[in-house]
Image 1 (cartoon, rainbow, N blue to C red):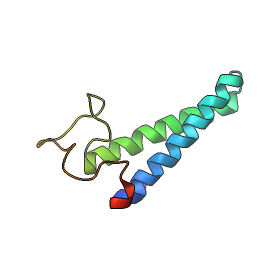
Image 2 (image 1 turned 45 degrees about the vertical axis):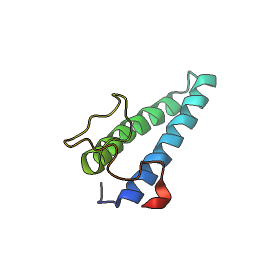
Image 3 (image 1 turned 45 degrees about the horizontal axis):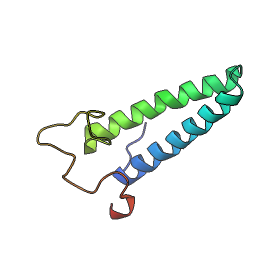
Length: 87
């Protein structure tokens, strides 16, 4: 995967997360769709990789034990992930 800026990486996470959610809803109504399931699993894997990449470079995306943090505590160091316009 090519090198992305912080903003680009966060945007990509949002895009893949939206796709995974959409596929999840589709699979709720079409549980026997092998094609949708394969696409969902592909998105889930990609999403996991993107989140890991983001957290290694920029710190945690989530708090309350959902994301590890490096020292010092990174959660409060900069604008939070949902504050995209501040990047």
